[in-house]
Image 1 (tube, rainbow, N blue to C red):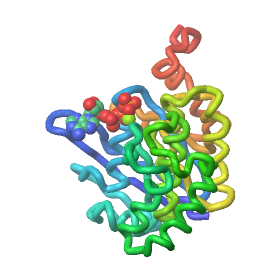
Image 2 (cartoon, rainbow, N blue to C red):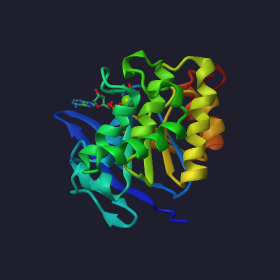
Image 3 (cartoon, protein in one colour):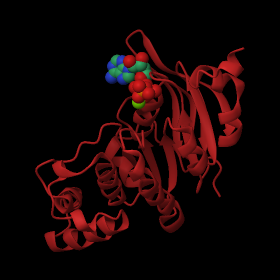
Length: 244
Ligand SMILES: Nc1ncnc2c1ncn2[C@@H]1O[C@H](COP(=O)(O)OP(=O)(O)OP(=O)(O)O)[C@@H](O)[C@H]1O
Ligand SMILES: [Mg+2]
């Protein structure tokens, strides 16, 4: 197991006067599921953006499998095995589920026939077979999240960044979604990093956790340790006992 599968070293991202990430140093271990926690505006999405290459850091470095990728383009990072999903899902709403998964494959140079076959594998994996010919706009939030996972899978990721994984998903649909995420790791050997607010979900999904506040990592450890940490409970959960 690679302990520093993904590593950030003193990563800083500023937007004008706003410091969204400040000297963030963290390591993500291979084959594990790591949670990124923190209140609104803590810098969680910015961290994903900096890892995926969507924003350029003001300072610090990002390493993936030992290689410095700080200056690599988003597409090069994607080729090297980093994929992500978005806090707000953005499928092509008029295209079918199948076409949504086929588009990136065909754009990558695959024949339509091949893209269709390969798309089927991913649609099957995320359990959207029954919806494959429906337009993406009719999907529920949980189904849209699974469509995003299918699209991410099509890039053959080694590391998958999932932003607000159960955000907006109705409660009864959550277990099915979590099951898909667990299988990504177990059956596809994908290292997962999740941003998620629901602590109950995290305790059943994540191994390790980092708690961000105002752009800084302030607590790290196992998910159980972080969830139980006094500072985390005070800032994040508004825990009356911890605040007392
Ligand atoms: N493109 C941008 N331009 C200017 N400021 C930004 C930009 N992206 C993020 N920020 C600011 O950086 C800070 C961190 O934002 P970020 O979206 O990373 O937080 P977050 O932890 O993902 O929050 P949430 O839980 O609400 O999704 C916030 O103050 C935000 O307003
Ligand atoms: Mg966010």
